Amino acid sequence: MPNDPPRPTDAELEILTVLWSIGPATVRDVHEVINRRRTAQYSTVLKFMQIMAEKGLVRRNEEQRAHVYEPSRPQEWTQKQLAGDLLDRAFSGSAKALLIGALSARKASKQELSELRKMLDEYHKGDK
Amino acid sequence: MTLLQSLSGTPLAIAIGWTLLHSLWQGIIIAAALALILLATKSAHIRYSAAMIAIFALLAACVCTLAFVMPQSTKEVRDFSPPGFPAWMVPIDASDRNIPNPLLSVILPWLAPLWFTGVWIFYLRSFLGWFSISGMRKRGVCSPPQHWQQTLSRLCTQAKVSRPVQLLESALAGTPMVLGHLRPVILMPIGLIAGLPAEQIEAILLHELAHIRRNDFLMNVLQRAVEGLLFYHPAVWWISRIIRQEREHCCDDQVVAMSGDAHTYVLALATVAQNRSTSREPAVAATGGSLVKRVRRLLYPEASRRIWTPLPGIIILIATAALTMSAWQPPQQSAQAPTDTPYMKWLNEDVVYIINDTERAAFLQLKTDEERQQFIEQFWLRRDPTPQTEENEMKEEHYRRIAYANERFRTPSAAPGWKTDRGHMYIIYGPPDEIESHPAGSPPREEWLYKYVEGVGTNVFFKFIDRSGSGDFRLVPR
Image (cartoon, rainbow over all chains, first blue to last red; front, side, top):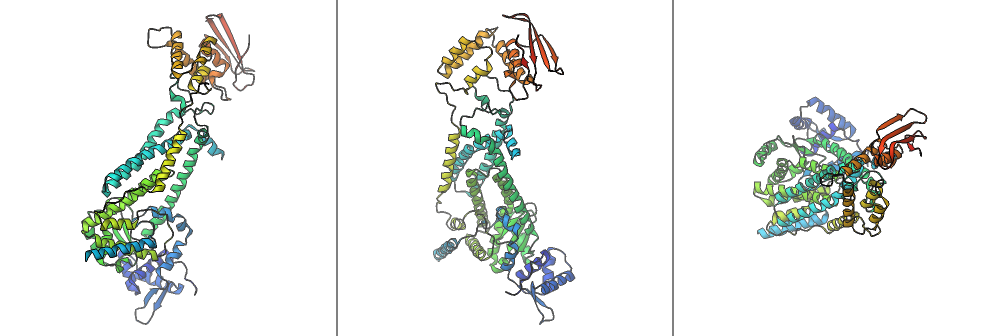
């Protein structure tokens, strides 16, 4: 495996999040998304993304006049990196217990997922 | 370790120990009541409310138990009601402790420190967990596409949520979730918004908004707080499961009520569950209801659900009940009159100085508690200076003297005051007419003068000397 990029800082993580959300984008696109949540300078975003490109966190496509950036690693890979933090791992159980969501804190097993699919198929057949 | 040891003997620790034991049967009763309610109704709203009330009711019961047990535990002076009354069942002095089950008397002082340690661990983990999820509002988040803000406000109106709600995409969230109470934020996993049809996303958002409207985040935090205090209790584990399960069912019901479409919502749930399994999430303790159960309930609401408590839960409850029963054996009232019954204590401690040999022999012959009770009444009646009145001045004076002796003449070596020489004289002859006290003398001494003692004579002297210098005054024989 080629040299893995370092762990992203919080600001870098934010930029990566935008790229994972909207796909490959220019600095202007990224800045626009970030600006919706909090005010940010275009020049700051540009500087960060240039640094990230040097670190290897993003790849830059220079064919167009406006350079297009994309993340160098998929989101799952970075999540694994972030979850590797000892603190997160040790207390993730109690952290999850405090969350409210659409699904339970426990992941559905393979049997449960297939049972779910079966139920939905039957329901569809019943509809028709 | 010595800190724990000294903490374990305190009245508070004993009181907490009793509270923890009582909480076992209290929890069983409350869980049984909840089970009846669960059998009686299918309404998720009622079931959720009942379960929440149950867990807080158990907490309240424990607080009441503690308040009830504490005063008895802290009484330095034993209660001087007629013998047979169990008020002195929970004293703090090791030699006085009258716990029927010998195993229990060893374990009881340690229950409180162990419980306290457990609570600490639980709360520490929860606190640190809180820290890590609070960060999720800022770390790895970005705004969703613009038009979703309008959709969100429309849905807020539909769900009757007045608080400002923020919608964010999150790189760290594996499933949609709600964070915060006063300024709630809905976190959607990246790609979900883009990847699902709009009406499915809306159904999910309605679910989260239902949570927000019901203040579920805050309720969950309070629930976890109670779970921390009662972490040892199997009934609490069960009730918590019910709460979490019914909470989701309530929100599911609200989504269907608001959108009128169960099927779209179910598809959304299934897709989210699917996507989640492929994402790398750290392993997590099992909580919450089963997704299959929820979906079946939504798709086929008319089908009667089997409401069953899982077998392991029942076994745990029965085991807890058995444990409580064995710890609560009634005191042995054998024909041999063992030395630690309340009646023997009355004989050997309360009236030991004023009972004569005939009476003592007669008392020891008695076989039943009724006989003993009657004997005691007659004993005091014989000594009552005013038998026609309600009050027995002699008995009151006697116990006053014991109390005074315990208060004033207790030795540093922790012998109770009534056992000392001064206490002995005080109880038999009452307060002396004159006291000459030389506490600074070498050795320290005290002289008591009684002007007249019936059956002994006039000007009766008693001399007490503290040879050891430790406050232990001994009577000098005449």
